[in-house]
Image 1 (cartoon, rainbow, N blue to C red):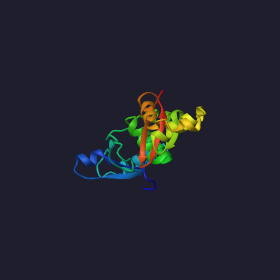
Image 2: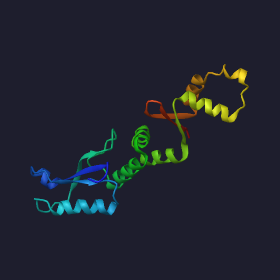
Image 3: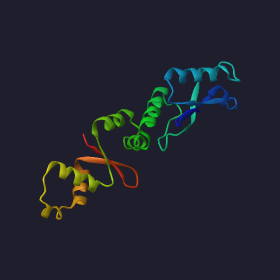
Image 4: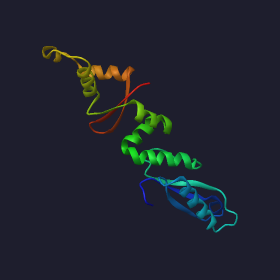
Length: 170
């Protein structure tokens, strides 16, 4: 295992015969290499005519669940996405119920940035768009503005204490 995102692919003929036979595969490597590793594992099977496989375990995907018969292309896309975006990628994928296309679009088109709170985001947004006289600035409730923004205009994912990532709703 060379990366942080690995899958255990099992030979189903051996499994059904009561033998554990499989291989851990780095899911971030090229798709051809993943398919080759699966075919090599099946060719070395203790059972004749092994053709079918399934994902029986995985490591590094956090709370994202991979199905036993998940497509290798999808697993690869998720692993590469997570390797590139880390904890933020996991949180965005979780928000979008593991829809990799939605998660990629959110990070490329809708991501506004990381803030310590939604109130900090509201304050920055207000100060960027408006010049507020200093004597009135004390009357602005950024907590409530942040709450209102989240109800209509943005959604957030939190990756750690004081790490609120803000995305525009489409």
